[in-house]
Amino acid sequence: MPFFALTTSLSLADIDLFPTLHFNGLIGDTSAPSFEDIGGHAHDPNENFALQGLDLGLNLRIDDWFAAFVNGNIFTNSDHKLESEWEEAFVKLKNLPGGFEIRGGRFLNRLGLQNNLHLHSWNFVNANLSTSQFLGEEGLITEGIELTWQHEFEQSFLALTTSYGKAAVHAHEEEDHLGHDHESSDDARFTDDLVTARALFGYNHTDFHQHRFGLNAAWGDNGYHRNSSLHSIDYSYTWRENGLEAGGRSFSIGAEYFHRDVQWAHPENAVNRGSSSQNEVMAFATYRFADQWIADLRYEHLQGRSAGPEIDRGEIEYAFASPTRDRFSIALTREFEYKELFSHVRLQYSHDDTDEGKDDSIWLQFGINFGRGEVR
Image 1: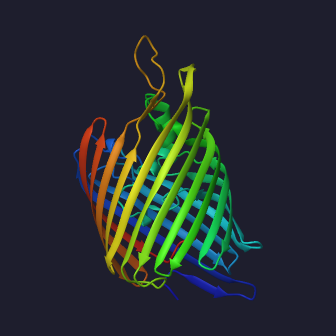
Image 2: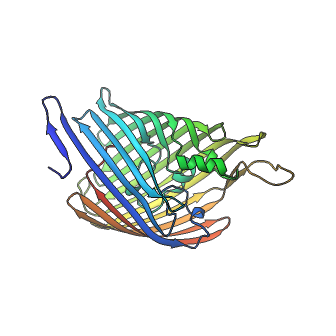
């Protein structure tokens, strides 16, 4: 029996209760004037030496019909102070009649390629621009209910997921909103009632060649007390040397496109209102060239957007402003494994090209992970 794991057989149920622990810390530097100029996600690098996340989780599985998960995260914020937050706390009913499952509580929304992944599952030191800029400072966390239907075919599957609830607004985001200068895109994100949908189609040409195609949509209230909508499409292809078996070399390539429409209003002059759209594209490649060595490439382009008329005696203020950004990142990761203890060392270089200049950053990340696969 694994250390700190409880597996017991009762007359009515098999109960599996086990903890997980994940640590990510980094050191590095950037040529940008401030870390805020190259960051956006709460767990992006925000100082030269940072605790990105100490993630403590508890998982529960009962037979094949019930699961639950709760986790909290401790990290250093941009003020170099420790901050903590509950990330997820949900229960899930699985294998319901007709191929359905239901998840309820607080959860990372299954929207796009990255949003439902915790920091320890990222391929890079920082989040995708779409995750931080479009979905939220910590991604899109929903407090509500989610329904998924999945059907298996001979060489493929189709999964349809929809959720309804409220977009969780974090304490540090609320503080930022109270004092921002109205030239931030924070209010363009979802802040209240929210509906999302995702369709995921998977096709295995053979056991060695796997294709995944996703369509995503979200509609909800934003920080301007108006509405935002989001649509995206994603595709990934994976080749695995050992097919569906573990181990061996592998290669993945894919891309993701986001489009959002934002209804905005200037907070000090409600007459100044309108709508604006914005696009983002990301492409990536991952190559596991040895059992514990991985090389990653990523290119991202975030379309700049400004919306809001000239006001206040000729001074230009924008209700919604987001700069154009191009980012190229390359990472090399070495993994280590001992029983249920997994760790990695990751070296990453990033180049950011924005309206205000070009910046280079280099990071060395250390990760430690204990426990089996989390309930998702």
